[in-house]
Structure formats: structure tokens, C-alpha cells
Image (cartoon, rainbow over the protein chains, first blue to last red):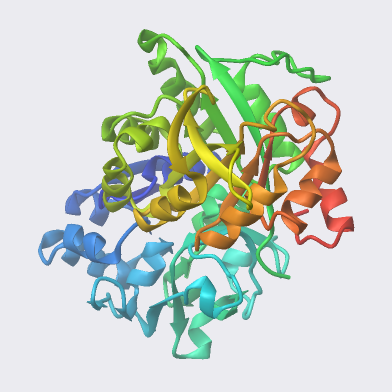
Length: 209
Length: 256
């Protein structure tokens, strides 16, 4: 039986992520954990998160947990969700500037307030289109332009076009899905995106980079 | 192409059972929140809101079990409101699988709760529910906040209050017109428009929906980011899909 660990950094709705993965993949043993040993043993890892990126990195720390994540990034399929996507980039403007994991070159910035954008509300909340800028195994069976559920106030822009596999427009275009090697990441919430989201999780479970 | 306006069916739940006489065809148990949520999900609901109207505190735990069950098989955002008084209530509902928690009366009693909850869990999961009623006086229309199901005036100006809640870290405003709630006369569009223009966060219009054109009006005239309705969906008059088709025909971006 294949195993998957949802990394628990105390932020976001981890229960939903775990439930959606269980629903998507038959016979997958899902654990929610912050134990480095459990994370190292998993065949696949999901890096989720909501809220503030500074709090997220504080929970990650600089010790064994961080080492385990760095190790998994190099050796196993990993899916970042929401803050999990933002954390994989070089740098976020949030919390007076927060360095990221540096897996994906690029920067994370805040959406401009509605007064400067003709009324676009922040957070960007709801179902928006994801344009598949590149083919990738996680898009299997999902239509180009499919809607997924977003909720975020900061957005990432990948420096290199080859790292972006999905783009979304909210006032301007941003990177809503990225991939590099065995790492894939999405800004939206597949666990809250009905059947398209379940399909994406199923694709991640089947992915062998 | 772009962000879709959301259609949100709302369910009143009393001691773990859906109330307000839901009439669905081909549904085994119309009082079971899990079954009803499943149905709305199939119809294309963008989110589901549960309002816990349980009066007795010893049955409060039932809502947590309802949320757990729904979250295990319905994969769209779930908002839960009703009886949220302290940070512990927020924590319990989020851990059970709620994506957002709506705070109403407790925010009026202790506005700092909203700030504490959003600092702790992120503003994306904190909805402030506001019950507003138009009051006499002044040349321009004015609305005040009422609590206890619209019975208790607070003296707070609705627009100022929504602005203040947004500054305190609310991620969204669920705006109910107490004048229109249950009337089926349509949203209070002037109220919706005033709040939507005053806050930088999304506004959900609620109260008064009697037909599908009311949903269209809520977005086009009221400027709402999402529309919430209960009875037009519950009584089998319209499906969520029909609501979205009507909105799309009116030129509104929806998820079909």
C-alpha cells in the first residue's frame, strides 16, 4: 500500500486535505504529521497551508523537520497547496519579507487593494479559471481553463516560464500552478474544488516523476 | 473568463437535522444535512453554508459531527455559523472540517474576537455575519446592526460596522437584510450596494430571495460577490444549476 503524509504545520484545514486524498485514492494510507520520521517514510508528501507565511516558516523551523522537507523535495513526489506553493518560491513580501524554500525561482507579492484595481476584492476568493500553460501529469483528464477554488491575498510569479504549468488572471496574470522535477504546487485548493480537484489529487497519486 | 460570482445554498440545522421543510425528489432523508449537502454539491453549489440554530447548548456538539461527516465527502468550501462565541468554538469547527466560521452576535459583544480569530487562523476562514435593518431618520437611507435574530438593536451603523470588521481581519461579510429575510421580495439592494462599496473584502448578499432574478439583481445592482439563498432551493422550486444558468444568461460570470 502506498503512503502519503500531509505535513502538519498547524495551519489550514489539514483534515480536508487528508479526507480528499483518501477519497481520491483507493488504498492510500494517509497520515497528517509533523514528525520528521513519518515524513521521511512516506512515498508522497503534501505540503499544505493557509494563513501567514511567517507563522508557517516559524512552525517549520530550522531543525529536523526542515531537513526532512528538504530531503523529500529532492527524492519524492511533493505537492504544495496554497501557502505550500508560495513557500516553495525564493521570497515572499509577506510578514516584512520572508525567505522561502527556494525550490522555484520567483517572488510572492500581495494583491493591490480594490481602490487601485477598479474594485477587485482581496482576498481573491472563489472559483477562477486555471489556464494550463504547459502539459503536466497533474492535468490529466482536466480541461484547460477548468475552474478551481482559490482563497489567498498573496500570489506568486515564477521567474522562469518553464516552471509555470498553470496561470490565472485576477487583475493580472499570476502563477497558479508550478512544477519542477518531482515537485508540483498549486495556489488553489484541490481539496475544495469538487470533482476537478479530486481528479488532480488522483493524478498526483499516480504521478511518477 | 475570470473569478466567478458564487451561489451559496444555506441550510438551517437544528440539533443535527435540516429544518424548514425541505422537499427534494429522489432523496432518501431530506432532514439529513449530509444528504442535502451532497445534493447541492451535485447541482453545482459553489459553497455550502450551515447555520446552527440549535437552542440548547448540550446539543451543540451535534453540529461538529455534521461538519465532520459532510467534510468527508463533499469537497467544496463549507461555512458554519450560529452559536460561535469564543475562539474555542472557531477551533472546534475548523478542526471538524469547516473552511470558514461565521461570527455574528459574539462580534458585537466583543469585537476583539474577530481580530484574535483572524490573527490565529487567517482571515480567509473568518466570516463576519451581519444582520442589518433600515432605520428612520436622515435624508439618506441608514441601516443598523441587530442581534438575536433581528430583535435587539445595537445602535451600530451597518456600513461603519462592516468597515470596522474588515479592518479587524474579517475575510468576508455575510450581509443579511432583516427587513427582507423571509419576505421573498428580493435582496435589499441599496444596503448590499452600500456595504459592497465600503469594504475591500467580498460581500455575500442574503435575505429575501424569492426568484432567480433576485440573484441576478444582487450581483448586477447590489455589487455582491456571492449570493446566498435558502428557500428557493430547499422547496425544490429551483436547482442551483438553474440559478447559475439564469445568472450566466444575464452576463454574470459563474462556474457552470
